[in-house]
Length: 422
Image 1 (cartoon, helix red, strand yellow):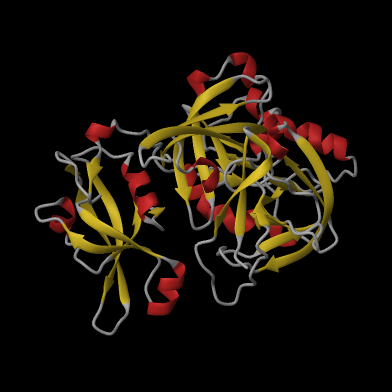
Image 2 (cartoon, helix red, strand yellow):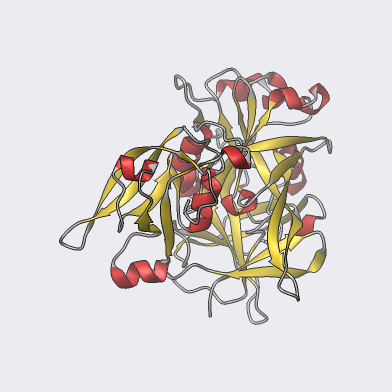
């Protein structure tokens, strides 16, 4: 059976939208078909005590105490990971939950899709999905929030709601679809002073020190009903499952639709995992999985330091000038090709052609963001205007059947006429 993810929307409290995985990977156990991403699509869990802080001094109203401020890692011009002291173990779940709540936000993803009606006509349909995120840092102008890539992908608009129920618009900072991670940014000027007094930066733990049997707490926006807390133990570590690059933490703490992307905490109240999926079949109980936070550290730090992306008006968006074809994971394994977008044709006179992209190349990244499908390629291009130059990572085929990675600078063209290419 294939790996499936469940999505929660306010319109269907008791139903799940499911989408099949993109393929299998050798050496990884296949997940039962009822595995549900505890919000892999948009309801995911809260983040409680995990933390990233900028090299700038974080305001006391966000960090809570001067001691926490002193724990930040100084790094000129970049945001770094901050870890906890590891000396405040408590068995009181209510204390851990109370301290975590200010670090958690809800995220609403509004998207518009085209659907075909019974008579063959096409109409636009607006959909809303809900998830959660973790406040991980503040820079001079923005509040940075960690979540899952699937929570924010395909968005038309993103709205963040804080613990005091005040809301603000958010933009994408950086995404990594392969690791299912994303960082979004809210402008500080868009946050009320009263809200700043209520929220806090979360704190990060060390997932490499986890022991089987250790107590953990999951906090999340289960089914979109609001923050809820579940507890359990670490059932196993270093689990390998299909559709995931990293090894996962297995836990029996209840992880429901809405917890995905949320926090798995240790007894110190530190985030040691990002809740991701659960097994949901009648014969299975208590099998949830989380991405180890230490494994994700470098990726998250990179995403935090990317330039904030805002969508360009449709008529001003740039295009590469290629005809894209998806390279699925099954195809990649079968033919020994990298996963990404295969270039089946290059438009004459386009920016892609000028940069040296040729038929047969496979596009894998744009400005450091992973490209795994035509959809992700198109989504990323929404953030760049015609005339802008972007770094495109491609895999170039060689005579021996292998591929060589190259990064080229492509000046995006203007899509004057309706083009079938990106």
